[in-house]
Image (cartoon, rainbow, N blue to C red; front, side, top):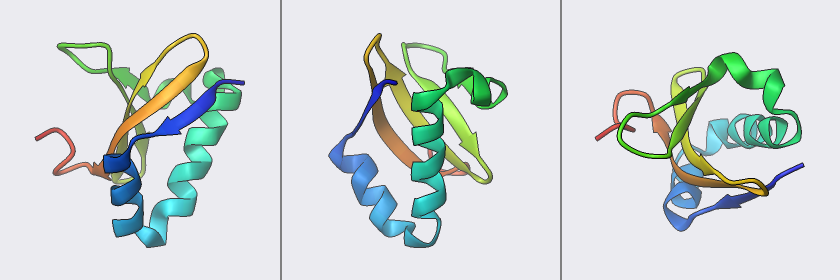
Length: 82
């Protein structure tokens, strides 16, 4: 299992979207335990090493190493890619 690191900007977004925070964190933990389980919801973003995880109308942008998942952004689909 990979460890999950949530950067301050992503933590602030979780506080802002309190109603869905538990569901978003659950998906991140599920992906950290078993990446194959959510493989169809993961896409590589162009122009870098970042990936995005789709959770309903929300997107979780993260980078992945051999031992860590670093969550950089969390937000609604309409504003996450700005």
